[in-house]
Image 1: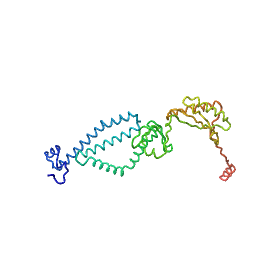
Image 2 (image 1 turned 60 degrees about the vertical axis):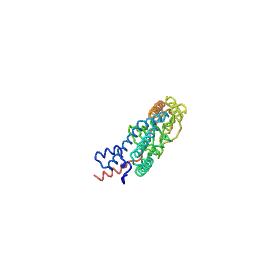
Image 3 (image 1 turned 60 degrees about the horizontal axis):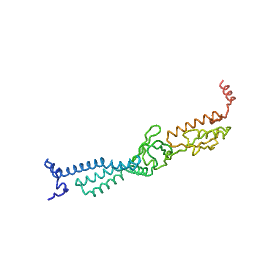
Image 4 (image 1 turned 135 degrees about the vertical axis):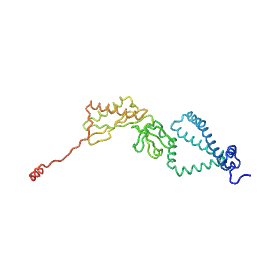
Length: 305
């Protein structure tokens, strides 16, 4: 006859329960301990099987499909969560805590409630990470800018919750994914070429056509500046002390290092040509007006005497 208030496993203990009873434990306590032990054994077994067999198979499938590394990381994390979920559900059923499907439903409901109440920010960043994976606004190794150019750097890692960016001062930024999806994100290296701009200021008395020719010639001479699209120059500003000529040119396979080096070499070459041709790069001049009233100073001196 089944004891009242005991689970089937406690009323009909297995080898572990009987061994615990023989060791002197109460029948109910022995049954509960047997359930807990079976739960741990089942969970550990399923977890290790998943980590040793399922996870490598999933990773191999991703590699076979040539999936990018930044896309693999969140998917592998989801696979680990799935293995843990299945392991807990099977362990519940194996331990006699309830039906397998009922256990899965209960765990899912409890998990959803906990996540909804305590992990709102995590969910937001997780969803943003999924959008980063699907939309692919950037990849690992890309140079990106966000928050109106306040932050800039090279993407080192993309996970479900955060993205890690290495700044050009060698600082590592851990950025919540929602910060990269809720505002405008700039990816200068997404295409196969990048257009750069630089404003040269010349004096009002200098020859604009001659300066324009020098700017274009130096762009055409630089090995890393593309001939197509061709470099161009436009008069864009009439400042207080100079005339602004904006140079526009393109580089291929852009990166932050290429961008800084190419622009520096190009601007240096133009400056040297300007010096050779006598074209001035003026600096702002301020004229101060006023005078001193010496008569007042003399009067003050006489009064003092």
